[in-house]
Length: 133
Image (tube, rainbow, N blue to C red; front, side, top):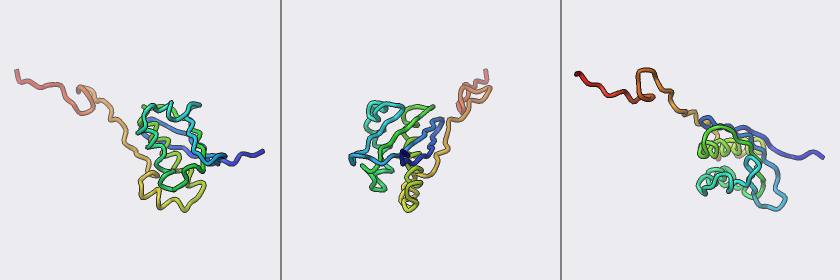
């Protein structure tokens, strides 16, 4: 038996998410992240709201179960990586979702990452205090 599913990869900061969308059997969206329920994995409702945004924008809530493997980064970066992956997987399902997802900004890979610390400085941009004497 071949299982119908849509696969995509999402990224944010140093977090990478492999997302699989499978048709839901009972018209409710189940989110499973790294083998755990999404609510238990993220612990915060705001992060689950971020994950659900592409499904809400395309009005496909309840149509798919989301199975995801996430590595790297923190919880907020992982949630946004999952959102990016879900958006890309929805495009694999139906290209007509592109204008909606693009307008919402879910297809753009947010490339902002932490700036490296430079030598001779306290941090990336913060300097050591200067004194003439």
